[in-house]
Image (tube, rainbow, N blue to C red; front, side, top):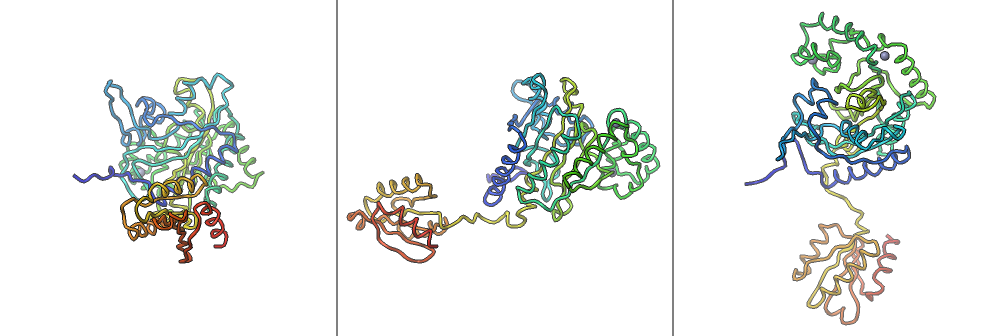
Length: 422
Ligand SMILES: [Zn+2]
Ligand SMILES: [Zn+2]
């Protein structure tokens, strides 16, 4: 039996693991600057939470969720997105009762049983944030500016921000009517998915990659916004313009999840091909209430780390790691009774902050040198039986192909000196 990673998943390793690490570090730095705290919620939750939050009629809940029953007969699901679990936590910890304002971020894997394709995985990673308790367009602008900084800190400056308003419970039904009438006239060219959506969630049709081309003359939500939604939209655009934030209006942009209201946005990166969305988000003013809490507004986003990594590093992601060789030191053992000293030298180097590794006792010096090479060492310290009698070791500089015998006590300062010269 040969085991492989489950379909649609992969091991994050080498350069890709390094890329994820770098993305996480820069994200944490920016989140801190904007006053966000980290939250780590469970990767599985009660299945009802997702049905209620994400919406029964969405593809995610209908077709893509990993649902299972635990040994106690509880119906659970691997989280297909991050927001539902965070709203659950927000209410569970009664943060709504201490003023309601809360800024939370998360980094972690999500799970959806989608058809695997380039850049799309069944276990995929997201960086996301939720900002609770501020109903004004100022919060929307705050979130968009955070996103811009976060992407820039991750080396992603060539991105587009697409923004739209999808109205509220007061004005969306009006638009829905107009859209239904319009879609009815297009029955002939709707795909099967859209025919099904027509009855339950016609807004989602606008999002359909297959049919989009036919919908250029569809009614626009923008034209149906109520006074309050219009004012919110105008205020946001005013704030964004005042700080020269670059955005594009995207009148056909809707989101795949049911819980959004007013501001929705998507971030795309050119060069990612057909799957060019790096992330998306929007305002969800009724979700806290939907999940049993008080009427508390919120706005959030999620970025796909898998796509961020490939947008930044492209083809080089599959390459092996390229460490700074200069900083890597390999301790090789040559002869009887050298193991103990070698081990001590190794630990001294590590304590001094060096990246150090040691050869296995009993291996030939030649085999250890091959290992040092493969490990991309910059220096090799050879602990030899003869030299050890004089309290000395051999230091080999692999880049310069030089070697010299030195006192064990001087090892660190000698390496330091040679490094500075290189
Ligand atoms: Zn409205
Ligand atoms: Zn369609």
